[in-house]
Length: 375
Picture (tube, rainbow, N blue to C red):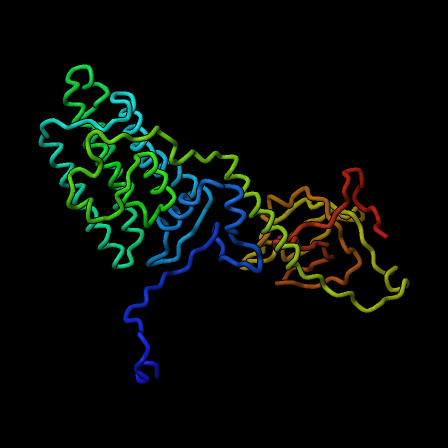
């Protein structure tokens, strides 16, 4: 209908992602199972880009993905800080140490220098192509490859050793490294805008077009003065992450309590009817699975009056080994009933936790003996 009307610009491609879960469960704002942005910014005031990075790197493009706080921490510490931040820090620190923050004039380029600069110039087109195809996770990976390129260049060239042997060669090495750092400042802007702005201030760089990375060899010109090193991505400590996990666990517990259904009260009974019920404390002394029955355990229970057989539908919650020796509450005067050929001579009292797990109703002290009457 809109197309036939003629005046609307309609989309010809609508990209869509799969679902992003949180710590294994579906996001739900009504159940408070979410990471609220205002709370995140209070707890991590300088980590806006860390969250952007983690979400983009884990984007559910072709299948459902899971956001976890441990993964968030690992991506910040092991990728942003250890790869991106580490490279920038080394370049800026060495430039200030060797040249008082002045970009050195390069000498003759080696084959490694030319190869590195050529590889650097190819990245804008590669990253742009991924973005235009809505492959944001892929594009972010290529951005991190620029940082890896810089780290590999420094690790292979070792300017901190070369400075004692051939200081003129180090000028070229640091010049090349500074070009990579400036390219990172430009190329990271779509993904890490706060980092790009901060890095621009450190490098005192005003370049802002991707085309410059592909066409210019002097993104940061010789004799340009850069600023002092600053930490781009501080480490996230285990205690900070545990705080977030604990917050979600508290939410899960609150939801379980809120969602727990309380069975309505049954109709009023007389004292005389209640007095007919004989509840005793007993101990399970034997237990085994009922053959060909998934839910039933056959128990031998010492009721203090006698040892009797009770068939109980608890096999999906307890193994036979778990229940032997358990103190239990037994309805001892329930009429016997045959279950799969075994006569059951009583009933055990159990209840459910909010999580749906069965638990025995029994005395809260070990001093109560078998046969003790409840009433």
